[in-house]
Length: 335
Image (tube, rainbow, N blue to C red; front, side, top):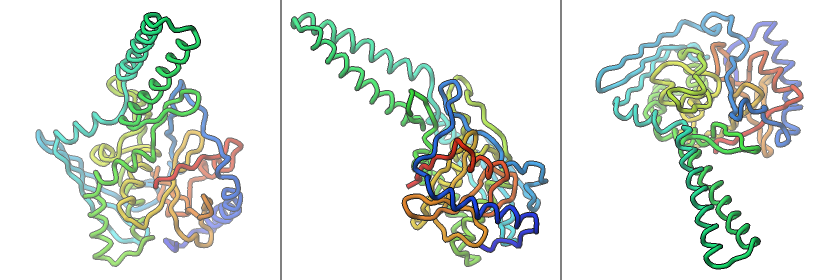
C-alpha cells in the first residue's frame, strides 16, 4: 500500500517490522491474552507516538452538537493520499439514549442471574426430598441448575456486549460489538462509500480514509471502566464514540471494524496484546508492511488508536514491542 514515502528513520522501523512479520504468522493460534485486572479485561493504551502533533498528520476539525431531540457530529480530516475529506453522523436523542443503555453490564443484572440460581437450587433440593431421591440424584439436579446458570450468565453478558472467558473473567466481546454495530452505523459507512465513488477509491483508499478518520479526527481518551454503576470494560460502543468524538484503542478498533464490515469483501481480525488492541485487514502486504497470518491468510496490521497518523501496515513503536513480547497476542476474527 503506497500511501506515502517514509523517511529514512521510518524505513528502519518498517524493515524491522518486516522481519517481525515472519514470526507473527507462525504461532498466532498459540498466543496468549493479557492477564485480567480485578476480574475484568481492560484495554487502553495509545500507539506510542503521542508526541506527534495531530498524530503527525494534517489539521483536523470536529464539531459536536446536541439539541433536545438530536445529536450530531461533523469531522474534517485528510486521507493518506492527501485528499481532504468530511463526514458527518446524526442520531435522534431518544435513539442515542436507548443505544447507550444497551451496552455494559450492571451488578444488579449479574445479581438477578445469581438469584435465579439460588432459587433453582432450593427448588431442586425440595423436589429431591419430596420424591425421596438420594444424594447422587440431588447432586445431578444441582449440576443441571449450575449449567443453566452458566448459560444464562453468558446470555446476559452477550446481550450487553460482553463475554465470559476462562477463570470467570468478563471481557468486552469485540467481534460481537463489530457484528452488532455494523448495520447500526451503516449511514456513516455510506458516507465513506459516497466519497469512494466520487473519488474512484479502491479498497486501500477506503480503508485509509476510515482509518485516518478514527486516528486523527477523533481524540484519544480512555473511557471509565465503570460509568454510572455500569461496567463498560473501558470501551465506548461505536456510535457513542462517533457522537462524543473520542475513544481509546479498543473503542476505535470497534468503530473502524464496524464501519468497514459494511463492505462485503472486507475481512478483518482483532489483535489483542497486553494492555492494547488493534486489528488486521485481509490485504496483500506491500514491501515493509507489518502483517500476521491467520488460517493461512495474511492480514495487514492496522493501528486505529491514534493520534499517530499511521497508514495500514505500520504500527507504533510500543505496539511493535508488545507484538513480539513473551506474552504474545491473540487473534479474534471479525467475521
